[in-house]
Image (tube, rainbow over all chains, first blue to last red; front, side):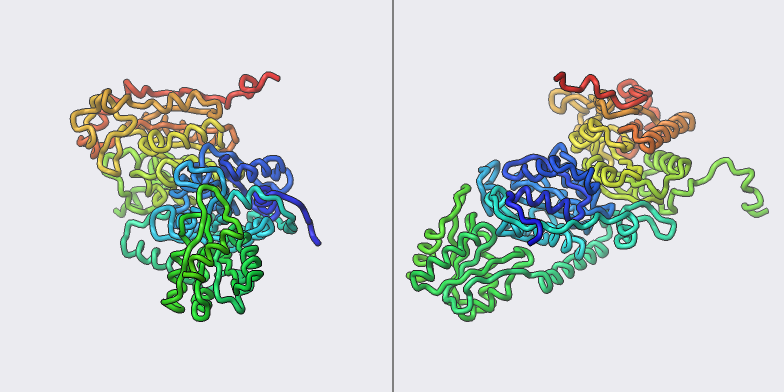
Amino acid sequence: MGDLRLMKGNEVIAEAAIRCGCDGYFGYPITPQSEVMETLMAREPWDETGMVVLQAESEVASINMVYGAAGSGKKVMTSSSSPGISLMAEGISYIAGAELPCLIVNVQRGGPGLGTIQPSQADYFQSTKGGGHGDYRLIVLAPSSVQEMNDFVDLGFELAYKYRNPAMILTDGAIGQMMEKVVLSEYKPRMTSEEINDKYGSWATNGKKPNRDYNIITSLEMDSAKMESNNLRFQEKYKQMEEEEVRYETFQCDDAEYILVAFGSSARICQKSVDLARAKGLKVGLLRPITLYPFPKKPIAELAKKVKGFLTVEMNAGQMVEDVQLAAGCGNSSVPVKYFGRMGGIIPTPGEVVEALEQKLIEA
Amino acid sequence: MDVKDIIKPENLVYQKPKLLTDKTMHYCPGCTHGVVHRLVAEVIEDLDIQEKTIGVSPVGCSVFAYNYIDIDWQEAAHGRAPAVATGIARVNEDKVVFTYQGDGDLASIGTAEILHACNRGENIVVIFINNAIYGMTGGQMAPTTLLGQVTATTPCGRDLERNGYPLKITELIAQLPGTSYVTRQSAHTPATARKCRKAIKKAFQNAIDKKGTSFVEVVSTCNSGWRLSPVDANIWMEENMFPFFPMGDMKDGERDAPDAYLKKN
């Protein structure tokens, strides 16, 4: 059964980082994710695996520490919550522009501004459409359980290195603070300097070697033609992600007439909503995007050919609904796509979701 | 007679450091960056640390420092070089990491990063080029611009009420317990350049010896930003900057001992 524990989502992020051979964590306290760094500091991984943990002076500094360490080929990460991620936006853009792999965890809280410390999914646009300046994309993973908080740390790093691109775990205060049973991953050793040189020596600043030119980590290019070719290369990379990395899960969709689309915490609630609706004789299913970027467009387009409508359930004012509308429109331009959600840190109830489904789609 | 017959190895008294690349520098003639780049390259060569030195270049005129010295480099966002250097140094204890920053980068947008890196005593070297102006963006007021100094954003001279005081950030840095060596130098004459080279070498040796943060300010000219000839810029610097930014070591030794900073019980 492996290493079965009862743990908080935030604690699991820390544990998974140590176990997956992470070289460094740089962070700054912010509610509701402070347990990530607290757990790391209490675990003292520098004695166990040699992992560095540093409390930076700000989120601005911590993301730039990640930039530096990732540039040297090391496996590094940070975590924060919404306002802190806004502060990191500059650094994230530079990391994407310099094509560095790293993992960023956003345990979302409500906004805008200081907003609330209660859970939210209002950073969907920020995570999937930009956040920082310039044409770039993050690989965005949305866990809906504490188990996935564990699993996506390793997966996030794997994808980040595969594409030399920052990956983000987009979760929220509910999953960060929630205790659930989790099977922790096996320990993987940190990479040695030799392994880093063999694998990443062509770009990493691991010290100039006699057999290669010196490496430069930068996002700057003054020649417009070269910059455009960089931009095109990034776009090719994002296209490859869209072809190869889409992950999603369906629940009772085979005979469904109506599809709920929800990620993270909302998807957990919607599972119960599906049960409630089915008990009332309504044929309802759930599609849960696991990768928010790349977004599961194709399965939604396929479902759009046969269902009567989609309802997105989000803890925001309706953000993912735009992507579902675009995707559904590719399959069937007339299928209705509606949104239901709560804001301010309020988590929708399964019953509310079924009511919204009836009002907005079935009786409409 | 061929030039090779005249310049025999035994007659050489001066040559380009091996670690300076052959790329044509983009700096204006008369700019101090070229001299300091050379000094940094010489020191890295002297200490035989090419393979373990990582440079972090800033945003500003020296954003392209990475084109000129044959070592691995990372280019940082504006002001963030000390955080980037911290990241590199913390996960690569065998490396020697330095930042190369101007006064807009270090003393304005990057004050938080430089103060905290120095206060933590990161094992890094900071080379701080202070020419009292933003060079790359066209000569605007910097935090170090003197009162009365004319810049693109202070066309009538820097005004105290409107713009506040010039910042002596190096004096602040010298107060921080994590620093082991804080000095102010110039490099506008052969004698001062030699002194500056010694200071840079000490700073790199400190980083090798893990003695905490070493900080070398070089009071510099920006003759194009100042709208002066290179020669006049040197005179202006001596007359105006040296009295306000006096030369010399502000701290030379060890990081502070922890005793005075410990909780009592």
